Length: 576
Image 1 (cartoon, rainbow, N blue to C red):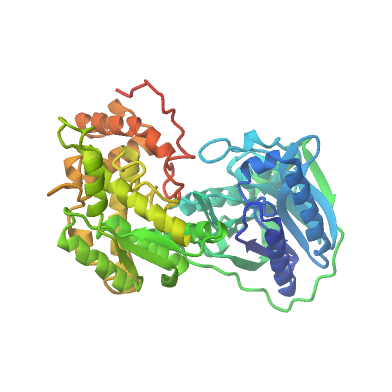
Image 2 (image 1 turned 90 degrees about the vertical axis):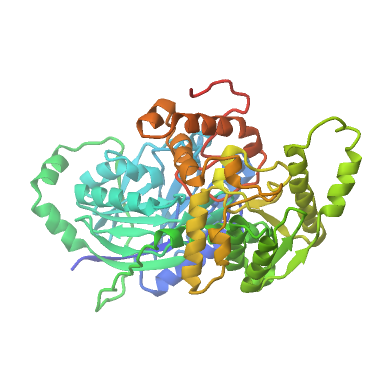
């Protein structure tokens, strides 16, 4: 029986860490060889990390990445590999090197360059024009990159019609909640439509706002999932592919026979790969399958991985979180402890005259549950001093939001002072609902280095908190934190609902406006209250200047604030 032992290395690469990425690639290459793999597959731009952004405008970076690729090639004795890197000819290309037994066999250039959402590939790369098919041990293999496979009539179709039985697709596909379902649906269609085995390998790890979830998949020629990597962690997925089943499927399907006969593509080329002696195999290796995570666990793991990698890859060792006794700071603290360990998390508490005893009790109880220290610094002395300083300037003016914001800005100053003194990274606690509507204080609660829940709507924050307590089988986040009405506690009796629609009303409007680009008329037809919609749209539009000054935060939804949604600050267009 014809078979191919394929290994998918879903690894955590770091942008610009060419040496570190080299060591990781070589380590997994050796592991794959030890497990008898014929070929091992690495993610898109594994050599450089993804996305390298304007590092690609530095000729020295491109040359250094090519030098690293040559070192990887020299380590490939006895095995074939597909490795993502940046190629340089008359221009630069997002490329995949097909290497085998210490030699560079060929290079594939990505054809479809995404230029939407978080992607800017047309800014850097030239599109490829060739569709190679490789002959390895008499097995025809097509290689393409990420976006290429989403096009039904793209490189994959041409490669399959030219005889490719296995399609290797390497990816750096950013995560958002539930995205794996869309990938699986698409891969099922591509595999069954082309009667080809598809190996979809994806990067894992955090890179600034992006999280890559791994979760590589292998589909057989019928579109059935036969192997699947884990989510949010590195893995080497090794599987024996039954090539006879592809031959049999194509033998009895007249549609593919006719199309293959009529197919002619000048972009096609065929490359023979010199054979490397294969070890005898008495048994087929059973495929690895890990079940997808439950929705809130998936989001939680994404937040943990994104936070951990941002902290570690940027050279921090400890983080500080301002605990208010509220729901947002509670979930951020839990994520931080899971990401970097309780010994590396510092809590703070900054009470004022409007801080309730319940909030104080809840903040301290959360810290005790998590096993983290908490430093209390009352802000009354600083507030009273600033109030006295501003007395003459504010003479004749009523108290308003200015005095509320002073409290938040004092807390922000104290956090940054602690950060400077001890080298702690400040994790901010604002959620997507607040960041969207400007319900956050510039240089106050927005002050910090990383915004963990920046793309998490408030209603999802509540879901996450309930999930955390179920996850750990105990009340980590005090129940009262989840059940009490949200409040910034900047004035007596204040509630978030004094300034915003209830979050159950607000979040669906924000989703429709920000993630789906719906206008007032469309939302009215969907049953939203027009006056509430107008109010929310106005808040979102006038708050762009704040968001531009906020720290980076982890992408969780299909359209995050920032890289995904780029609106001008100076903007007179209104949606109503």
